[in-house]
Length: 284
Image (cartoon, rainbow, N blue to C red):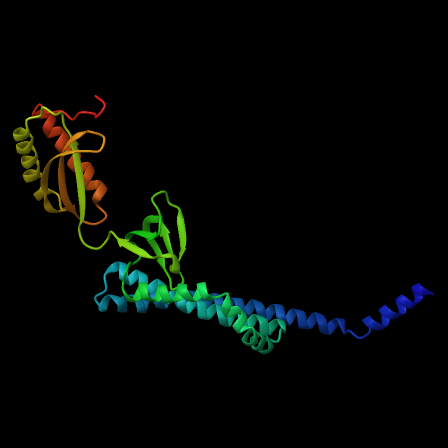
């Protein structure tokens, strides 16, 4: 009797549904979702083409440098993409049949509660806005970002109003909330100084060393475009480990510090070796 009651209940319940209508409605929604995704894909590609083909060239006319152009172009594209994603989500929810207006009303009621947990998000937006407004860094810049004892160095990969992406020397991509960026040290604005400490024996003839270094500087500077100012011989120094060195400063194009250091060090060592002055290890 209990079984017959359950069967009767199920039959009565299932009789309320029109299977053909449900299938047709489901197929219609699937087709609509497919067409919506197709339209979204086309709009996304069109947006990218518009940014690269129209907006980016217009930034060149505004006399922005290359890094600034890339930063603004990526920011504009990301901002428009967010708007596109918002409408995409709205349309998908509407097609599924969820009461979007009720959800938005509920979100408005819960706005105060959400706002209490969104202070960090708002701080990211405000700090990101001022980073862009003050032109603190652009895509491709070499920077050191500091927050108290924490320091992160690398090249700017992407700049947004909420997060900044930095790729460090080993290729790791870091996503940094803008509110955590307290100090920006930009190493891509103007020439950078390279410091060379040439380890010499205590009995080295300084007159001979100076003449050799000055000769290298005179020959090398006109031939090397990355050196923006002739090297300056600072003179004898004693390092913290007791090593006796001759210190040389040189200003080079930003981003070329390692290349310039290796070139100058090699040229100085070769010239001093030929003059009979050899570099000495501090433990020897």
